[in-house]
Picture 1: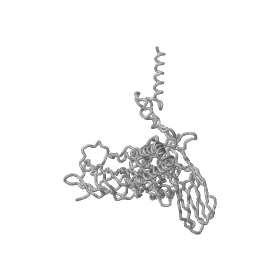
Picture 2: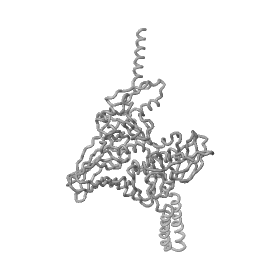
Picture 3: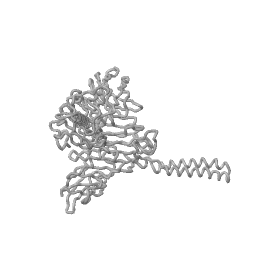
Picture 4: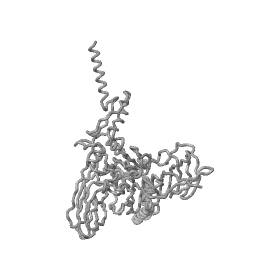
Length: 603
């Protein structure tokens, strides 16, 4: 009897030890951390935990540990006279957007020199022009589209032979983080150590010296997160301004040593001491409480970089072996004119076949073979002219566009933070477009016939084949631009009187004032109208169609949040707030959603 009791006790003890193992249903869950971090166990799950819940818990666990440093090597150009240059290669390519390449140029001569730096890759050119004073040494950045991972950098100057240097970039496919600071500061901030060989890291890192960090938004927009691992006073003011723009336009910004007064650098922060704050379309994380709890700040950095959906994802073409009317991932084009009128063309071809076949036979019996030899080419020529006339009269020579955007109005700073999506179709090629430094032009992940020449001398200038002829294209835009747009409201005896000063026709929306929701009327720009009290709150706040909504998956939740007192969401027509709005297009569809603080007007 005693032996049976001992055996039963041993079995029970073994079962308890087994269910206490990480990953076992009913047991505890452990986070995978770096070798130097403490493993933390969560509260034991109940015995009735379903397999689905266990799988969801496992999906949230990191699969790697530590970090992987992408070591950048300095490649010096061949000596070509008074100019010397160095390229830092093996740079970490971001998931989207552009890869910033650091180039140092030194004019050792006593005369000023103009310099042109250009990257040549797969028939595409990225360039920047500089003007160097005597003895001047400068650091500049060339922004290479993220779908390119190799090329040749050339340096040209009058009276000097062309110098060139080839390079290859790192195409790591995990979470990618740009760090302002060095390796020592990063390890101290995050508690992470280098991942061992043949093991999966939590993040891949690229280190940039804060003093020479890029001043263009496009240099940061493609990375999953940006970590500032140095004290705030070591970052120049203009770099802080770009980092704030990066965060408010959808980036994940992480601060190891936050400024003493964070709101001076980030004016939209609601709580200066919060660990994680929603900031515009993005987030700002400050390393505070994570320093004293496991698994540490490095785990929070991984969470931010892993959960970093793009605010806008333009759809690219399907693979060449799946050519059809759909785009990548089975999405539909946003422009009706981008689809060929197959039905009308088939009808025209059918009529042509009837005229040439039975009609030619009847003509041959009545008029003879000579009449058929004359009629068939003539009919073919008329059919071709009909197709050309259809293209000219219906499609025309203008650029057709459908424009969608989501905008946050920062009225106190007179700026608009906009995430835009544009669908284009041009009968004739559109050669160029200009983008300011506070904006980013985003191509699909796998672009088809991308622009061949990008000039980054003063912002981005696309100089060649921005839109190929008779081709459907989608471009995303992220921009922070100055604006005086606003919506004013004035309380009256009958309700609320609103004035549309948003710069575009108002097509409706919702306003919250005095704890009451009001439906905005349809108004032309500059017009006034009466808002109507809203009975229910269950209707769609944005009214965005499914196709464009899928392309804004990372930005829509920001505008869908419950309205606070004095805020509004307005639906506008027109061309929107993005830089490409100045282009002359034939607008076929438009929906622009604007969220901001209403300006209360006095009587």
